Image (tube, rainbow, N blue to C red; front, side):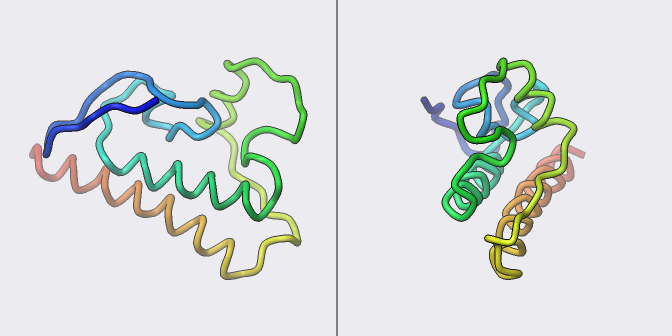
Length: 108
């Protein structure tokens, strides 16, 4: 599922798969394009690790628990990750943070 965003107009609402949602979406805060960096980071993480960052493989867990993990837990990197892989995933999260800061700055 997706939402079409208008330029410089953050939105609020929930769309997507919980394990790939940025914390801003899970917290029901306003967001913009930056949340896509988070989703890309989750996808790359899963390609390397073989599981999503906030749920164990084949783990049966309620949506609320995945949401809590996205909001509160730090992702863990196994030996499958090279230093470059870890850096890439962290960098994508940083891009999300930069987008948020830029969005706040543009409103002030």
